Length: 441
Image (cartoon, rainbow, N blue to C red):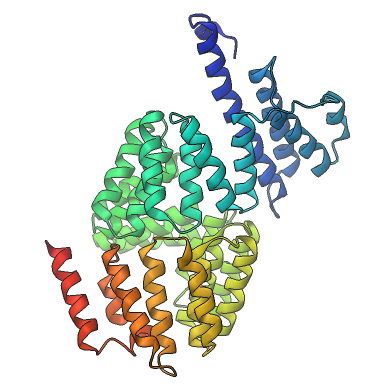
């Protein structure tokens, strides 16, 4: 922190750099604490040691004026992991003034508890006061993303990107959003931008490979999956992905080799188990569900693992009751995550629990602008219109809203049986036709 490079800066610049480094150290300690609390985490003692190390680095960075959040985090470490030896270094009286750094760690802690709405409020205030606070904008974007507000998230990621031009995370997250919306050309461009500043960023290599595969660029996908493997990416998922690319390229021998390699590897991460579950979807349901459950056990806070299991139960096994039970468990993990509320509403509607479905979907749409949530609201009211014809108009209103907001997955619209009660209406067909015309322009 006090090295030769800092000596060329004036005192205010040096302190600004130290504050940035201190915030980064606090976040790394916070992440290590979360990892150490995760069931089945490998080498948890080593992870606790890492958290303590980063907390001490933060203290060094902020010295001599150490904010209260450093000591509170150390207190958390002592209490959570029976490290009473840490208590002696904590001052008897902590600073009482709430600093921006205190607010920043408070938001990170709220995110760790899946309290994304309060985290977003804290971070919005912080970034208003500090518009060049890269990490503040990044965490605010992730909070918006986690409450089902993707457009606000995209805006904040784009604000964050030029504030740290050598950090790939903002561009990577923009790519994830583009990928989710089916804007594959834009997604590939974002991942490419992330790799321009961090060529070994394996998540960007992995997802660019996925995107290239969806764009039927098999050779490009193979190149990306191979690079990500060299840089230590999730091997199970990458070998399966590369096998799909070899199939597309017409190289079945290479595809078989990669699938056998993936099957022979021991899954470790949630991504490993998720990849195995995805590969076994069309096969043995017992094996598929075992992989979904293993992904959840690897990281119970990983919401996509819960959603993947619920979707498999509902769409492949037609078991909406077990899908509902699964998504309710996801809501216990993150009550503010609007996509979980929307999925629950759909399963309730399929089970003919009309009033509960309406109550749940209205919770989901209350604070979010995600076109996918509006689309699911259209599905909910279309389903319940079977017993209450008056729900048709509300379904159509939400359907118009989702298309206005950018929903363009016409393949899903064509096949989705949840819309059967409204799809033959002239006004429904007219709205779809208009949206298709706009999408071609």
